[in-house]
Length: 308
Image 1: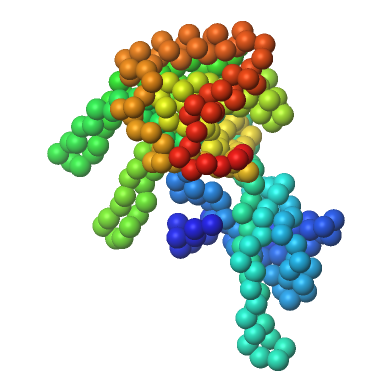
Image 2 (image 1 turned 180 degrees about the vertical axis):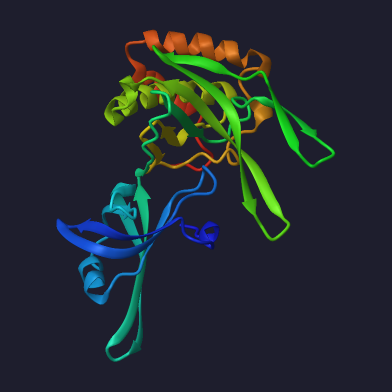
């Protein structure tokens, strides 16, 4: 993994529990780096003791759990990854009985939950799904710069679709900002799909099998119309009890850079909404959806040939 994006302060510093070949290894010091951009992936940097390192050195993967406790010993943050791929194991010796060991981990399907317990929030789930770049899905943005330096964006032709019963997604561009120095900052946008859900979808299993499965199909059709491979790469949900973030693993993210460009779309941008509405509704009626999925994937592959 290219770690140039992680030459910065960690997001969390935890004592992790690793399960490696059915052995439980507790209290492994670990720095957690979450992605700044949605096409990047999280990274773990471990600094184990000599005894912990000896239990891990022969393994290539394990599972990861960690908790951060508040002053009242209540869990404030929970981090869980069912699979972590280990890499860059090394030990430096500073004397006959003194050494320093480190290794990195690439967590797959990392789930980070912050417990907030805000009873004033309405009983809704606010969902933001991070989408790989695709200019035909995002809104047109009219930018206005005021004399005070304030910047406003007006959204034009924003796409909204009924994904399934009770779930309407709206595509949008959100923004992030990073401080570069004392008087400098950098801002960039990224594509998202937003929705408000009732607590029927609070169960993670229901959420993954219904919403994300439907979104995968929808984005596959969008990939065909735009001729740009598109996928969801993670999501954030918030309700009155917690804020959860999920980073998709075991998946090669489309970057939007290596795929065909916006001008090469199969459908004219002005007809894209109608194309998606007709194709998605017809797709839902097809009994053999796997064959259709394979056909679209063969027509719109990424420039980097990969097997998921």
